[in-house]
Length: 280
Ligand code: BTN
Image (cartoon, rainbow, N blue to C red; front, side):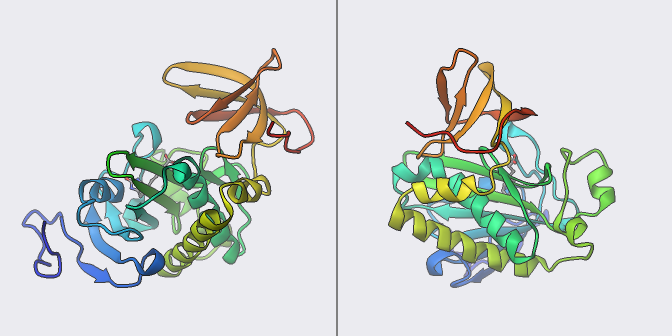
């Protein structure tokens, strides 16, 4: 196992394989902040260095050369203008795995609130401003090691040209666009780590229902007819909120309730007043 403190130098091709800076206590619960200038993907690095990572470490790269989104889509963060980091959990309880992505989405929502930006949440863990995506979360699990890596991509200082370049999955927005001024990425990162730590502590203390309750307050899909697709099927129906584990509940046209662990959701139309149906 390498020791980045002893070997801080960059590799010849300019791609680094080691954190350039390790900030003790910059992660969750005094975990470390492992800072890179450039990585392929913070999630990929964390997953392939689980021996090195500790519970609560945060892997942060200024630039990602091959950032990944859900369903293997690319995740672009042009010119280092986005926040791209991964939270590493090496001692997680399996019962929290499903809700952890939602915990991160809530931490992003709370961070945006600190900057006076009002965000909504779209299952499984997208963060939107008036329907435009501002952040996404990629949750990846190594079941053998009981480890979870939660990658967060937050559009901080993207400008209109970035969004309109056609390279970013649209519709999208950024903190800069919403605030009409550039935002300090370091401040956003620090705030996000604090919010994430707080939300994780709350989940462990009170259970995942606390996440589901908080989610309900900002649920963009509430009261909608939706379509959910994954590689194996497509189904439409009425969105009925999250169950206590964070699974999506959909009531189909035969009034049968279905629950989903994963999938891509499209909001088709608003069909009722937004209220959560009972999770029976
Ligand atoms: C999505 O909405 O599709 C999820 C996007 C997740 C992007 C982040 S950026 C940091 C981390 N590293 C990656 O390669 N992906 C995640």
